[in-house]
Amino acid sequence: MVRDAHSSGCLASTQIIMANRHLQRSVAMQALFEWDFQGCHDDLADDVIARNVAEFAPGIENSEFVSALVRGTLEKRPVIDALIEKCAPEWPLDQVTIIDRNILRLGIFELMHGNYGEVPPKVAINESIELAKTFGGESSARFVNGVLGTIYREMGEPMKDDTSKKHKITENVVVVDKKKESIGN
Image 1 (cartoon, rainbow, N blue to C red):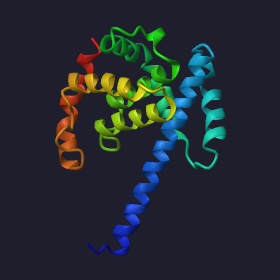
Image 2: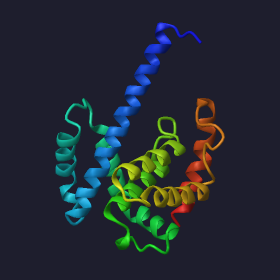
Image 3: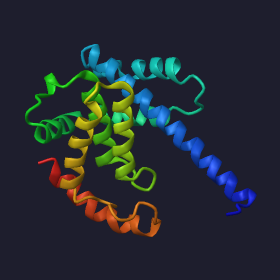
């Protein structure tokens, strides 16, 4: 298959964006870990974000994605934590490792409140599994996959059959939003 210069440039640009997003998710998870480890003080969140961006991603031009992930996760934490407890009842939240707990928080936030046009649900789940493989223990990836998979199924598996066709995204948003509201109850 022959690609023209334009399509090759778009592919390279997409790969850079994806790598940048993966790095920013990693930094967001590390910031959430530090925030949790230091006692869950919401007033320290901005300092924790800035410190982690400076330490782990000094070359990124725009850290808004990191900030949005961390702030959004902290804002929705009560609902997110309740979902973790509901979907992993044999694991009380305080017994889940700090790494796994914060990977789950981040993944659930992105799964339930993310922009599906930019990050389809399956991508959010896969990114969380990759974080668990990188930072977690031996069974972390399996645990994260199980919890996020349960939540995804309870949401009605949004965009299951089509994560690439933009015309279907708007059709799914209305249904997904209704599921998002009901799953938190």
